Image (cartoon, rainbow, N blue to C red; front, side, top):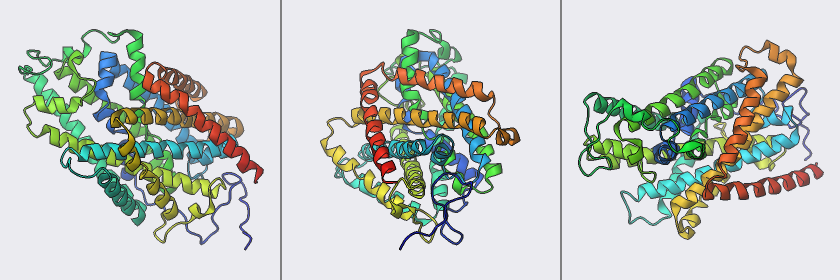
Length: 474
């Protein structure tokens, strides 16, 4: 039967929109859910496992690295917030790109964001398998990914509120672990703790002065720049606040609160944890391969540190995978309503969640199982995959900023009426774009990340070809 749904009038884009009475995404995410969803998506393995390498590369300069990225991401989120609040019919920033830049931009952004979170979630599921083997090394490799995907799918199929609650508690565990690290660090510095024999820096004393030892650029500009490769991935997920826009209660109040608080909290958590680690353990003695969190708790005499931190890191990976399932399913739902994905993905369950999109996304995550069996090195594969994701996320963040610039050019009256303007306006937007270009350059400095930069353009070639075919079909 032909579709009689009318075209939108002054709507988000040229896409179809649900008629009155049809299922819609429900606004059931409260302010605490939105804030913890974005914090949970951004605080993950990048901090718990990757911070050792960033510290070894940049030394004290790592604090500048994280502060710079946090400041830029705050500006990007403010730009996203101003545009989203100008039209509450926007379901995601793919809708924003479609409306303000063009249908091709919405298509490219939506599918790129879907793919970037999909590969990130696959990497996290692989990481979960590694963490589970810490306790049960005899388990077949397929068990942990299967159980993880089934459990997360079940949680996401219930209600969006159930997703919000589980992500709230996942994030709470991670935040408590970071706060515990900071408190332990303060106690060790206050008591003049001496690193015991057998540790990497035996005989060294915990001191605030350790944080600045060697200056901010002890390894030169090259070491400072190289740290951006890993640190930028640690901020992936901050933009999840934009994905929650269609399901947020009272978005005019809660989105600004979340956007204003999230980047600040992320910077505080990261900088606080990094300073605590470097104050206790001289940064030159921190292993780039291990977790400095485990090292800190072990030095504090906590015999169960390895098990506790393994649980925290497993939770961090599960949280990131959970965020990935949420964001990709909503993006696929939006792409379907925009006519850029099969119509089956526009269907919602009786609980108002995008069931078909969730099932297909979770099925795709099971691709982690063959990867586990064929990959010679889980962590090497993890590095390449996350580097690819970083390049894709930089593209998405850049599109958000360009959409903001187009918004100001095309809708000047709405910009003037906005109560949530970007600090610095156009200058801040152009600064953000220049920063992303710089970060893309830093990804060429190491072999593994250079490989990611080299192969990622293939995605845009495939996607561009797909767009041309899609456009010809109308």
